[in-house]
Length: 474
Image (cartoon, rainbow, N blue to C red):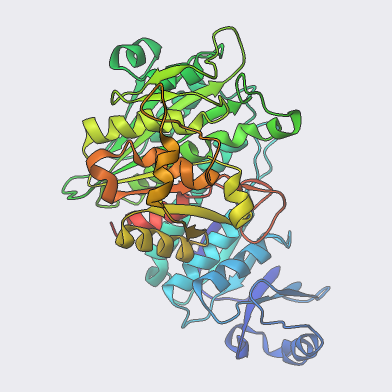
């Protein structure tokens, strides 16, 4: 990612970026000898002030050598984020951005986040490129110190989630993921990690997690990451689905559907990233992240359609489709969180269903909750962060679809709306926290097929930014 530095305004010999808003170009930052050329360039451009629009003016043998005119639209944080992302994609770094003296702190945060997020590159399988630097020319750097620190921590947490999700499953299995969680939390203040290995999972009754991971050469794990700052009055538990690869099990997926199944642990990656990010920001809220990790594979030890599994909380599920494994491991984790952790609020993130994408497309997650206040706060945090979610219903008359003749529940009934029924199934494991629980089905927005805005092609780290915004006010 780009490295962000700050400096007082001064003459620039290389590349200078100046903002263009609804009122035109920032004339205070514009060198006087460029006024005429800039006016001519903007007059010939289509909506030059549109957020994310960038005009380039080369100036051979002059200072600055290149001028970038970056549109910031109406000046919202989202518009500044779009401007930062567009500047990062110019390939002109290193460069200096002249920030208007009256820019609000949220604008500078948006600019910095856009610059860093859009310049992310996954490099685990390639030679890492050198990080380029961008300088923000600020008249009063101290005024923006908190905004820039928040942007940097948010971008780093998102990059962690993207890295984990992008990593090929030839390297990524439950044991590997557990080790990455230890490494990520090692330098985070007030943070500790516990890992359950198969023997402990069996002893404590995580029957569904063991069944889902039973077909793999690498057994499942359960990871708990605790961030416990002094004086915290609210305890939030975050649960993330962590299927490191999903073949569909014996209900095997078509080949094309398996190609991106390395992303099926995107919920766990986002939850881990948000927890480590909250610790870096020293947010005054206690957070426990619970990551059920498994690889859903095909072998003689794989669980089968018709099996009945016993969950951590004692409930049983009749299996009809082994490709509905994510809700099973989440059910164990949610039951554990309710019984053992007793949080004030419970939120889970999961790349759970393809139905999410059919209903809402690639850029919206589905949000479920019976708590209007919690749902509103999470949706608002997502909107501010640039991660959109749409609240979906939890119809009472659909609950009957979960009824089984052999067990307490059907995890994947053949009738009913896929994403909705999956959420209703998960709600059955929230116990006394039913009215303080929210679920994000974020399979579609967890992956981007192309670079767009602050997103790069591949894993998006969806959910990290939403959770950090929300946790800051929890």
